[in-house]
Amino acid sequence: MKQKAPTFTDRLLGRVSPVGLLSLAAPVLAVAFAALITMAVLWFTGAPPFKTLVAMVEYGVQPRSLVLTLNEATTYYLAALAVAIGFRMNLFNIGVDGQYRLAALIAAAVGGAVTLPAPLHIALIVFVAVLVGAGWASIAGLLKVKRGVSEVISTIMLNAIATALGSWLLNRERLAVEVSGSNNIGTRPIAESGQVPGLALIPGTQTKVFGLIILAVVMGVLYHVLLNRTRFGFDLRATGRSESAAVASGVNVKRMVVIAMILSGAMAGLIGMPQLLGASYSYSLDFPTGLGFTGIAIALLGRNHPVGIAFGALLWAFLNTSANILQLRNVSPDIVAIMQGTIVLSVIIAYELVHRYQISATQRRVSRELASGTPAPAEGASV
View 1: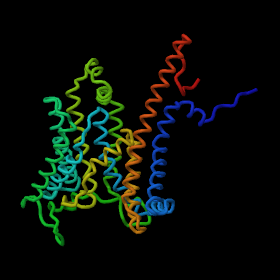
View 2 (view 1 turned 135 degrees about the vertical axis):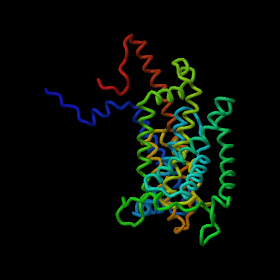
View 3 (view 1 turned 90 degrees about the vertical axis):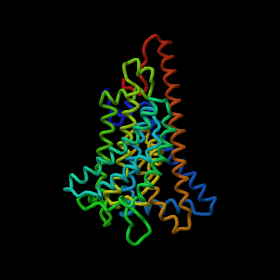
View 4 (view 1 turned 45 degrees about the horizontal axis):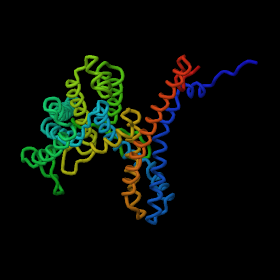
């Protein structure tokens, strides 16, 4: 009897180990668990759980809401990439928040002070932002390799310094001007040649998606190529896994620490560019803050993978946008914060369980190999 040829699904599942399936299922189960926790909180507060979540979804898929989600996800994605570069080397760059705000402020000041042809004007603003972000982050890297200062402590302190420095600069008469019609102050507006037009990607609304969403996509591709297709990326990941092994293979760990912090800061400098060049055209007191800390959560949610980070950024932005409907239904928007926190906590726990299962599965496979005397095929491999 002729044997039936395996289907594409059979071949695909044959290549994916049980550990891989669990890794894929972990974030989905975490989101479902977070939804159950949120429904329980809604029920406890007297709000109809199912109807509230359905209303959030219906509001979130409206054309204008989708644009707002994409715009917010663009900045979240860049923030998470900046954090992930450090995470892949076991560096905790908590200073992304201060790096992007200081970079956006100085880049906005430079952009508002000059007038150049459109491509050069935009390139100058972006270059200044990258340079400032990289320079500010390099301080923490140098402190770590020269004086052994923990990057967690130094970047937290640098956040405070960046906030104070930015406030001082923004109050300088030569740098900032009053925003007409309000008590706000900000840098001089960037001329039209330095602005990036939006993209009409979503039909049914006049609101446009940030033009620099393309930059976020490019940065995601470069991040993947750099870490997974270059010798530098291999050295960076190897150093993150084991410094002693990296040193034994000839890697200059101190040099890698400084470069990783510089790259993380350079990416952080890009975080404020979509908002600055696509919407506000000036850095003022109401410029978005806290994006660096949100990036930490999204990087953890996406496991530092560019595709996982993209899904995490979209989910986070979707929940923030959907929260706008809650006030109209007399429900506290803090419900969204509860859901986001539960998602991150659940994902971390789920990934830890998967990691422990992977270690246990490897130990069992090695035991079988030793008992049989012949190497056993790897779990999930095709025979």
